[in-house]
Length: 271
Image (cartoon, rainbow, N blue to C red):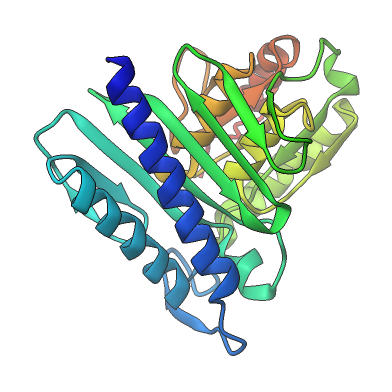
């Protein structure tokens, strides 16, 4: 990939994330309601998810009409350029619906199936994270200006702060709760933020030692996975596998392998 193409993709992703974030932050109606549900009655979509995805996809189509798109709210085009955009217009919809600040816009650009550019904007935290494959990860906003991201220094698993998430399907959630119950005595503590994109970026920013979740889709982790890896974290799924719906893990190098082993032993990848 040429420097010119990388710059173009990064700037487009940053502009799209910024504009969608502003729409979501400033345009949230006081009477915001559920527009549809997905995997269960509590897995919701709002009118703002749909509006944000349209804003992003319209901008991409205007600037790069030959690119493919995969969006959480239904946008799907094949494209002919070898570039595909993977978009979560509002990661953390339930948080957004309830007025909680932990939600984000997540945009990744893939070339031939590999993520090459990633942007995650968290407007209510005043932060944006971005990464280019092979060139590091960066954060702006809450810090003074911009800084290069680095995951936390080495620490044993029993001193690790780990974050996770839960499915909206009752039976899956019950199993995930059992896995967390078995894991929590073995780590410093467990957190649950409600936005996989932000939690992956928090691993990159050194705010967490690790994150794992069962049931994530590509749009949930594509951008955050690259940002975490470019910070020095290790990402994957089950042993020998990449992040997937079965299991997504990101952690510092010392924490990753023991955490992955425990999650595999506990059957964290089961429905």
